[in-house]
Image (cartoon, rainbow, N blue to C red; front, top):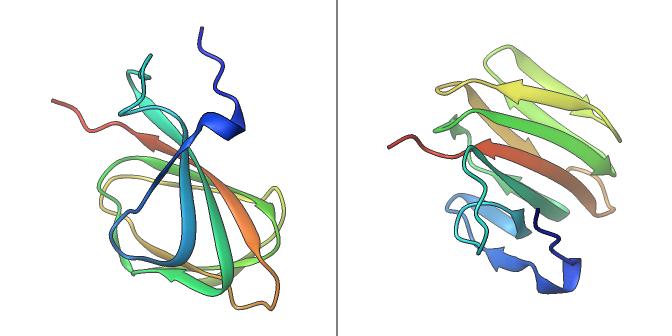
Length: 114
C-alpha cells in the first residue's frame, strides 16, 4: 500500500500539452511504483489543449471539473463532470478546454511494456 498526499505529488510536463498542469498521483517514476498503470491529474486552463495524436498506451480519462472538448476520429464531443472515455493504443485523440473556466481530468495510463 502507498498513500501519496496531494502536497507530495510531482508535476510532469508531457510533450504536446499546452497551458496545463499535470501531476502524477501514483505510478511510474515514484517510489512504490505501480506496475501496470500511472494515475495522473491534469488541470486545463481556459484555452488549454493537447495535440491530436495517437495514444501510445491504453488510456482512460475521467473529467472531474468543468467541460472539455474531445476530438477523435469519430468526431467532436463535449465531456462533462464524471464523463469517462477509454482509448486503446493507436487511437487518435485530443482534449481542449474551450470554456472560460478551468477544468480537471483524472488520467489512468497503462505503463509501457518492456
